[in-house]
Image 1 (tube, one colour):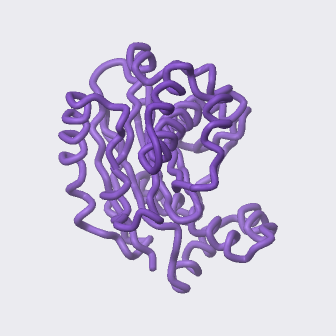
Image 2 (cartoon, one colour):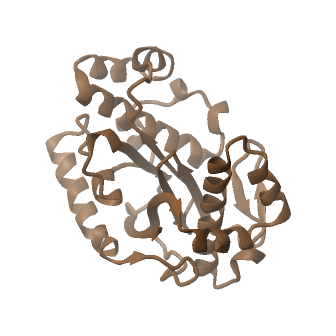
Length: 267
C-alpha cells in the first residue's frame, strides 16, 4: 500500500529500494530450524516477515525453545490462542537470532532496558526489534544502530480523530483531514507505524510522547531513516479487510541502509 503522504519523487525512490530488497520474498521458509540468515553487515537491515500462525509441529518446536519465564508468561494469557501467538513470536525471534549468531536458539539470553526494550545479553552489538499485531509479524536486525519496527492491521473501529489530535503534529493532522474513507484510514496507520518505529528504535516506548516527535521530513533532517513498508507484498495481502501498515526506523550517520527481506510460513 503506497503512502499517500509521500511525494512522487520520494515514492519512486522507495519503490526502487523495495524492488531491490524483495528478492528474498520469493523463498518462503517453512522450517524454523533451517533458516538462511546471516549476521547483518554494515549498512544492511535484515527484515523478516510472516503471519503469526504455525502448525502444531512448529508450535511444539517454538515451545521447546522458550525458557521457564517465557512459558509462564505464555500461560498467563486468558485466551489460549494469545498464549500460542506469544510462543510463535518469541520462538520465531529466537530462531532468527540463533541463525544470525550461529548459536542454539534456546541458549539466547535477553536483557530488558529501562523502558522495557529487550536486548541481547551476550551479543549487545546486534540490534533487533519485533512487532506483531493479531495477524502479522515483523522482525528487523541491524549491526549499525538500534532499529525499530511496527506493524498494525487497519482496525476500522479506531477513533482516528481522537488519536491523531492527541499524538500527531499539526501538519500531520492537516494532511489527514484532506483524506476520506479508506485512504484516510490507511494514511492514519502509515503515520502511526512510522512514529511507533521511531520510539521503538529509541527504546523509550510509549513513555516517549508521540507528539514530541517531529514530522517525518524533520526526522530525516535529523539523521533518521524512516521507511514505510509495502505490506501487500510482504504478507501477500489481497483482501482490503486484511490490510495493514508497517514501518521501520533507524538513525544513520552515513549511507541509507539497504533492506534485505525474507519471509516465513510456519503453517
